[in-house]
Length: 324
Image (tube, rainbow, N blue to C red):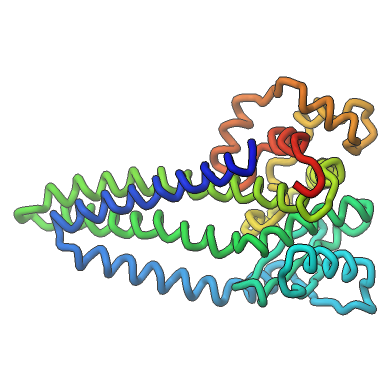
């Protein structure tokens, strides 16, 4: 999938999402009066704005993040600083999350408020080049304003849900002219609520592909990112259920989805041909010529996930070259 292809998919997705909302707005306006829609939109935007503003503090608290300085972690600081310069963004704050699950994540309200964090579990798992590749992925999320993009798109299913609940109540409980029309609109809004939720998840998966490509564009070798992702899957698969449950609510921020690790590690055996626990350049090149074998269950799980199927994602990495 080329960069142009990724951009086209994202543009079409946004167009579809807003077309759905426009259709529901017209229907609501015709049946109930447009003022109701603007009320739902206003409330949803206010709630999302509050969530967006307080979100970083909630993440810090949930992940037990401690921000560190350069003397404490000089290597980590040097890597993030170099990547930030290449990405042309302000130097983000660097944090260590007291979490066993190996991973990294980025968040913040805007570019100047960027934070890049690694978990306790990742520090001894990856090589320096692999860690750089994962951090390049996270820096790309900040550069692309992905948190803001997904937050704004998330307004759409929230608005549709509120319209559905209100109009279904209106149609079912107020027996007057227009009530049945309201019920039909409510059922349509509920249906499109589920559809747009899936589309927002799809948008999140596209942003992951963008961040992978961004890491390569920042000079990180595809094999290093592929190997790092493989190790993160392997590390997550070894975690106990309690450790995974601890990060369940924030896994959308991670470089991979830890809850899918057990299934993904089985599929990734197709890539690690020498069973070394890493993915080298020759294995990545071999994957680029291979027909993928992704099971039905994994395809279904991917539809409901914020992250792409890992085997498909690493195959995509095999098509990239450093600096592109």
